[in-house]
Length: 338
Image (cartoon, rainbow, N blue to C red; front, side, top):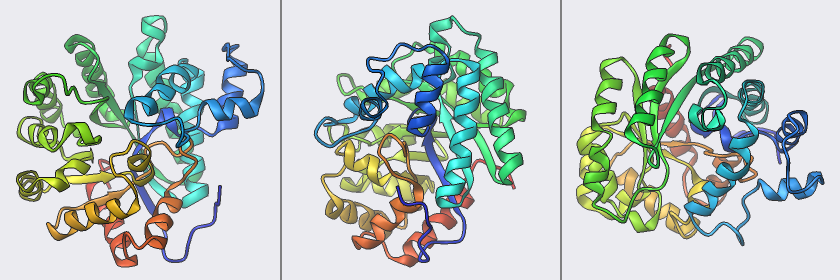
């Protein structure tokens, strides 16, 4: 992995969309697993790396991508000590590799407590300690975003919201809604399940973002339903909106910022290739929809933020001026105050 920063990039970068489950260095994750006596299917380090890294021949869709997180990385991070080290290491590494000096880490604390075997507040306190230590040592700005889960019940998601509100003064700045969109039922009805929770988050001073329009099977319907009912500050991915004029108009009128994650969108087949990515981002630019560039899961996909930008520049997806604008957008759209 190349760690120098390309001179074509701004002096400092902002990552708004990065999951703790996909961002811990392989050797750190391996060490955590060994320290905790976590039973792995292999004792060989390089086989472990294969296990927790996306490969184009094995990851065919979003479900395959998420399976790696749910089966391995999130479970390995399921203790106060593990989540504290994970958060600390991610922030430090992203600054060293790409000069990311503003970073928003997202995770679902309930997916780190082993189904209730570990105390949720201890998990959250540990994540905050890891963040605080990294901020102190590297002088960066950081915050946490708690992910609600589409596969969770309303009651479980309500608990996560309550914890986000409880720790809003300690560095938890927003909520997210993550997981595959339910395409088996009417998306409008699916989104309505979260309307009350997002309104309560707003009333409590939290910002919000939502994963939607991430896969080809969802179309732009999910993006429009999210804009109508959840009214998030930002949308994670939103790729499918580029193919629907109504969705594009709604995005433009709302001023909602898109969190584009290039490598992730390629791995999950939200876009077929970089040429389609260029077409999609070109459409968003033409509609003056604010874009940002992010990593999603850097170690899961063997990337970092500077690499994502260089890939877009070298393949003529974005210009140098476009990349600069993306990071100006990111700083303005950040949930971090100041």
